[in-house]
Image (cartoon, rainbow over all chains, first blue to last red; front, side, top):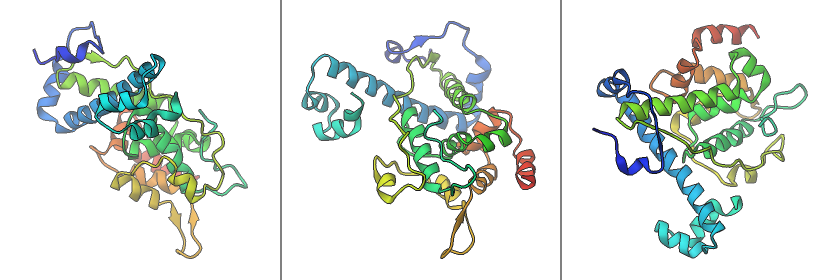
Length: 84
Length: 171
């Protein structure tokens, strides 16, 4: 089972049977694999944006959010500040 | 979101920076850290005449990109569905017709090398008196081959580059 359980708490599981054909495609086509890599980065950005908004709503300071993400408070604020 | 579409309406000069700014917003909403060829294609689709030539709406293209992502996730064994909306859009309504250098620098994202080349292809005429055309950007994007992301998107949308190229020359 290749599915990462860790990821699934943020993701809703697709109920349809896993597509063996598509899975086989990844074995032979690196283009699909690379697309997945970029897709996961996009996913991380979207999760980050949502969590920062949530943290701000709960009264977190930019400093705290920066500490949690391992960056300075300025860089978090530059990236997400205007959205909240 | 047509408010921020780079305008090619009659009487207003096309400027490639307008396409870059619209493409950058598409990239940002998707969570990308670089402006790629697929974002340029989305930006061009915001222009009604080019969307007409391609016979694709910007919504179709955005949805097709999401489907490509889901397929790729499934292919690496991640049987998961992305249940997150795109990032909130920042208002582009005040996008000027002729963007200044400062507009471009504000919240800038780097371009991928291929995207840069495609945008540079918008210039015709001498360097001193350049003329820009969005159609040239589209033509440059149509030349790309898979696994380039714009080519993948066009294939997913069932667009035949050769047919569009012919239509472009007739317009």
